[in-house]
Every structure is written in C-alpha cells, then in structure tokens.
Amino acid sequence: MSSDWPLWEVFVRAKRGVSHVHAGTVHAPDAELAMQSARDLFTRRAEGVSLWVVRSSDITASDPDDRASMFDPALDKTFRHPTDFVLPDEVANM
Amino acid sequence: MDTLLTYTLRQGDRALVLAQRLLEQVTHAPEIEEDMALANLALDLIGQARALYTYAGEVEGEGHDEDHFAYWRDQHDFLNPLLVEQPNGDFAHVIVRQFLHDAFALPYWQAMTRSSDATFAALAGKSEKETAYHLRHSRAWVVRLGDGTEQSHTRAQVAVDELWRYTGELFEHDHVEEELVAADIAADPAVLAGEWRSVVESTLAEATLACPSEVVMQRGGRLGQHTEGFSYLLGELQVVARAHPGATW
Image 1: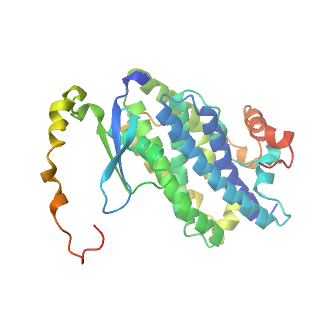
Image 2 (image 1 turned 45 degrees about the vertical axis):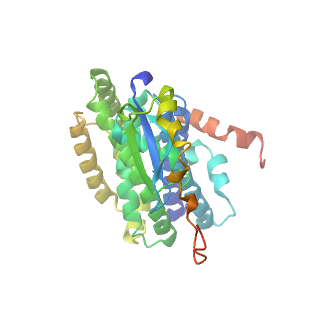
Image 3 (image 1 turned 180 degrees about the vertical axis):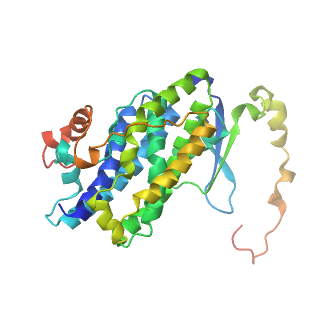
C-alpha cells in the first residue's frame, strides 16, 4: 500500500519576512495529510511559522543534462554582478 | 482517597495508557510518516501525564514524584477509562480509538481552561492546543478510512462497533466528579457528552460510517477494574523501572 502514496515537497518558512525554504519530502495520500506529516516531521522543534506542501509531480525541474546550456553561459558575464560600483562610505553593511 | 487526587490520577492514567498503546504501534503504521504522527501524539500525552502525576504527588503530599505513579502502582491502582487500554488492532482500530478519545479530550481541556484549580487551568491551556491537533489528525483519518475503499470502510465500521461500548465511561461521574464539578474544578461530564456526540456524529456521517445504537456500555476502568490485556500493557510499561529501581541516565 505504501508505494501508492505520492511524494510531496515540503517548504518551511522559518519566521515572518523570510521565504519558504525547501525542507524535504513526505509521502501522503492527499494534501491535508501531507500538511500534517510535514508539520510532524519538519516543525516539531519550532522550526517554522508556515508550511507549503506541493506534489512532487507538479514541479517542473531542470534537466541535469542541460546544465551546460542552462547555467554555464552566466559564468563569464561579470557585468551582471554589481562589482564595479563604488560604495559610498555611508553604506556600512552591504 | 482524596477526591482531587483520584480525579487527577484518572486524567493522568488516561493520557499515559493511551500513549503506551500508541507507542506499541510505532513501526506498524502504514507509512513511516504515520509512525511519526502517532509517536508525536504519544509524546504530547506523556507530557500531559507527567504534569498530572507531578500534581497528583503535590495533592497527595507524601513525596511521590511522577515516576512513582507511572511505574510503582499496580493494575488496580490505575484509573483510566477502558477505551484507552483497548489493544491495538489494525490501523483503523488504532485511529478510531484515538478519534473517540480525542473527541472527548478536546472539549475536556477547553472546559478545563476555566477550572478554578490554577494547576489544571494552566495545564489545560497547553493541552488544549495539542489536543486540537490530535483531533484534527484522527478525524481526518476516520473520514478517509470510512469514505475510502470497501475494505477500509468495513474495517473502520468494525472498529467503531467494537469500541463504542467503551465510550460511555468517558462521561461517567461518581462522587469524585460531582464534588469537583460543584467546586468549579472539574468539567461537567454531561456537557462534555453533548459536545462529544455532536463531533462524533458529524464525523461518522461524513465518513459514511454508522453510529451504533443501544449498546450496553462497559465500565470499571475508572474504578481500577481493567480488561484482559491491561496487565501486559502495564508489565511492558513498568519492567525497566522495576528491574532497575532508582536507575538514572
């Protein structure tokens, strides 16, 4: 029976103001029980204030074989980084 | 025995004995996620039992700590309702037992937040939140099993039919409850029974399960008279503490 339960991706928001971060996966028969399992497994030590669960099959992932064409072209385009800006002295923490 | 002590032990034993049954079930749930869920319920219940036993020790005033009440009393000293000691059957049986209990425990703790006993009121504030989640979980499963496949429906109905006879005892009251209800310490069992019934009936209806009627209710647990499997439960619960008295780790 266990192999019948689909996989769900769990996202936890640690506190107000920050984004949900992927925490792991659970098996569950539906969204409500996926939410309950996520609560039991990923927030039992007060790790979060909000949870998302998403069916893993609903996520479109990039193909590792496409890595060269997807990500390598970004490597030599340093002008996309703000490295050439001079920071004013007044800006302390950047 | 002092009425407040008896009352406190009845509640503590209810929590501890149900926790022990749930822990027996860990590794037998349909998925490891559900093992975790059941263990989490059990840990909440153990936390409640610990607080209640500690308070029982204060009320009794003989220097007994929580471990004394859990490990060093005998079968007839345990005052839990028979429902929570019923042995684990299949998953539907475990879930239905939990649901019938949780549907009692949530209105119970909600009412106890208004107890004139400060310790009970404080404990109720914490337990109410835990129990709301327990009921949410067990209720969700009852609906899925009852309104699931033909097999899950049949098993859930068998569990309801089998366990129903132990539900009347949850609302029993003798001089202990009556005295403490009059002092605004204890929740009124008659009010709880009404709240229990409305949650149970609506849930069973949603789960397409039939509500048994005209069942002869079993009783005795709250007086220390237990069903057959209880001595085995207690043996397993107490064996380590009794084999190594005073051990610490």
